[in-house]
Length: 278
Image (tube, rainbow, N blue to C red; front, side, top):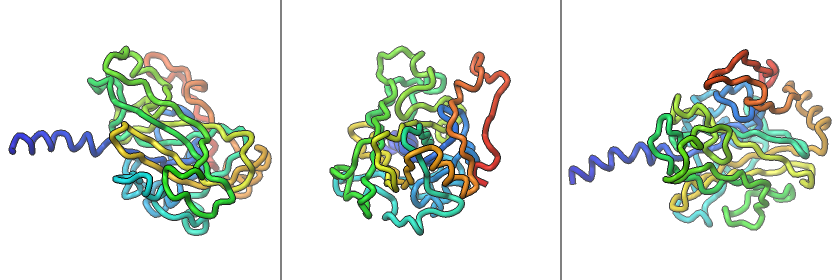
C-alpha cells in the first residue's frame, strides 16, 4: 500500500499538468517564444471572470474546460454565451477578416516531447481542431458531437513516438499542440502557438469558434470557446479595430523577422505597436 501511495504521488504531478486552454484569440506573433499580453488583441469568452489577461500565464484559475465522463453530453464552454456580459473593454471579442491567418496561444503544462529536458519522445498528441458555429445559432451547440459544429481547420498533430529521431522533438516550428520553442525554460508556463486561416467562404458576421484538443485517445477532450466578428475585408476589420483604439497590424512570424544563431536571437526586432490593447 505504501508503495502504491508513493507511486501515485510521483505520477500525479505529470497527470495534473497535462491539460490546457486557449489564452488569446488574436495574438500578433506566430511561433513566438514568450508570452506577452500586450501582443494579445482579443480574448476567449469569460476570460475576465478568471483574470486570464493579467494573471500568471499557465494558471487557469478555474477557466479550464475538460469534457469529462460523457463528452457527448457535456457543455462545450465554461459559461453560456452572452456577448454583453462575457467580454469587457479589457478582454474584448476578436475581429477577423476573410483569409486572415489567426494566431492562438496556450500554455504547455508539461505536455511537450523535447529531449533537451524530457527523456521521452512518446508524448502523445491526438487531435487539434478549430470549429465554428453558424452565426444564426444564438446558443451553443449541445456537445462536442453536435452537427452544428463546422470544421474550420485541422491543426495537425505534433510528431511523437518511441522510435522517432530525437532531433525532431527540438525542431521548431512544429504542427499541433507541442509548438512550444521555450518549453524547457518552464515546462508548465511556457507558451505554445497555433495558427489557422479564416475561410474565404465563411459568411461575414458574428460567429462562435471552438478549440478542441485531445491529448490522447484515453483522455476526454479539452475545449475553449470564443466569439469573433468576421468581416469581408481587412479594411472593414481595420475600421473596427481603429474605432476601439487597437492596432491594425496583423501577425508576424517570429522565425521570419529574427535571425537565430545557436538558439539565440541576433539583432532582435519587435514590431509590436504600443496601442495594441492599452
